[in-house]
Amino acid sequence: MTYTQFNILVWALRLVAAIIMLQTLFFKFTAAPESVYIFAKLGMEPWGRIGLGSMELVAAILIIIPRTTGIGALIAVGLMAGAIFFHLTKLGIVVQGDGGQLFILATIVFATSAILLYIFRKEVLNLIPLLH
Image (cartoon, rainbow, N blue to C red; front, side, top):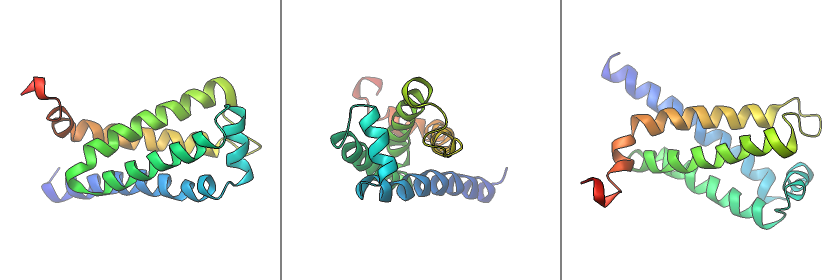
């Protein structure tokens, strides 16, 4: 893979993860009925909806900024691991007849962010002083 191809791949991963997270924020921040239902079922309405939405916003911004991609990817992996966990335990893969769309989107963000985290692992590991 050439340097240019690698850069295109990295930017595609960044954009996929960030765009999915950003587009779901509309539903979280406007208290859309689907979003309220999900967080009420988890016992985290409204603070969980707003708090996790804010964390997704931060993760998306950090992923887009080249210097902070690894940190954003780490946050996104954690957030999406939680989303996937709750889909598999409390919500179900299909939520309110969505055909599993939210679960699929969470899985896509998890996968793209995990790949980004691997690519930028040195950036994240450099944040731990004991490893220097």
